[in-house]
Length: 376
Image 1 (cartoon, rainbow, N blue to C red):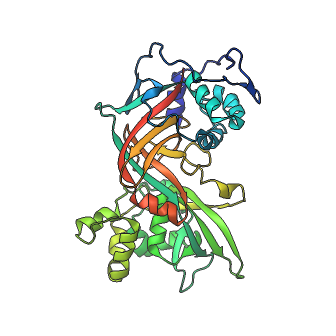
Image 2 (image 1 turned 30 degrees about the vertical axis):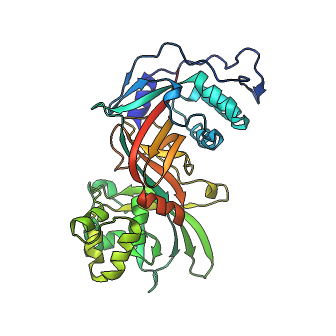
């Protein structure tokens, strides 16, 4: 995180003059232009080189669907980013908050006045990358183990930091000494080991917990650490075994139902395990996703995970992806990262929570183009 803050600080964060075009009305404390969009014919700035990408300045007209997006949806995510902004975007946050009650034409004109779009290219020069998606599972669980709920979800074990990497998934399941280290660290128990794996891969989830007295409460389990073993895709393992052709979660679960004696073999092909912390889920919290790497709550359909070596946290990004699963042309915020999200033109799209989001996340894998929107 210190590296990212350093990168942002190096880009400069001088205070901006107030945004007040001539003869323009105000929305809240922010002046906004009236009528058409600002002119976009001036000289373009020089490219910007990042650790894992190269940014090339472009005209706003290059952004697919820029005039059609429902920007107010993205503004909710941007206001969240302003809870923990980096030094580059912090000076803009007063205006961002003020424009949250503005019209979309006002928001679009403000973007064009304050920000410059840059196409994100890989260091190899390619402008095309990969888009996937992730979601927050909603699962049934129990506070205590039973015949129906026997798959534990753990808090980080004491002494986790003293051994890196920690034990593999198979060792956690089979070694008595590791089981002893985890005793008493159980948060909840699930019925299905594949659901537990999905929860660990997604990094967080909502659990409807049955308490020992029979009452129920919904809590969020958030990422609290891992065993720092490499992540291996169980879908890839099944394909390599010739067991499935479609590595979606529905296909994986169908294979599991037909091959119960091989479930552990599949699970152990991925040595990585995630540990959780329990968080209360208020009505307000339930309207947003878990906190991402930026430290702010994620917004369904408007938050993405990125490689921070390519795009700093808190950066507004124009995303375009057309494929068999979805057609996306929209403003999103870079608010998270993940161990599999590596490279200059790479993003993981936060789909939300529940079954529909899980279906999208399980199938979305298609070409991607990105443009960062950087202060002028």
